[in-house]
Length: 94
Image 1 (cartoon, helix red, strand yellow):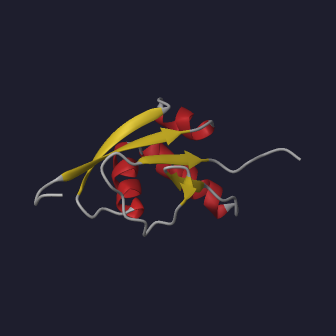
Image 2 (cartoon, rainbow, N blue to C red; image 1 turned 30 degrees about the vertical axis):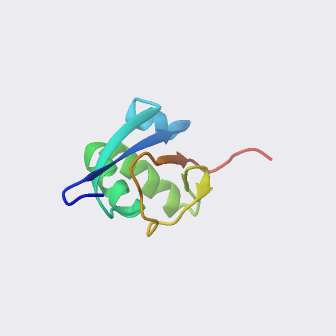
């Protein structure tokens, strides 16, 4: 990407995470070289209710799963233009 370029990343939210944002999908524009953690900070700045919900789930020991283009990813994963970040709440059932 050229200097000053941005990566447009689709963020898909599922279940109660979608409810916290009020939409099943949002788009983020991030600077070149942004990582998943940067995307989460940007998302949480726009949707503080989502940040509170994810923090509460993690506090309870319930893992929130982050997928980039369908593959599990950690917060250090670099994002590229056109990537799709899916955020899944903990699975329930038995």
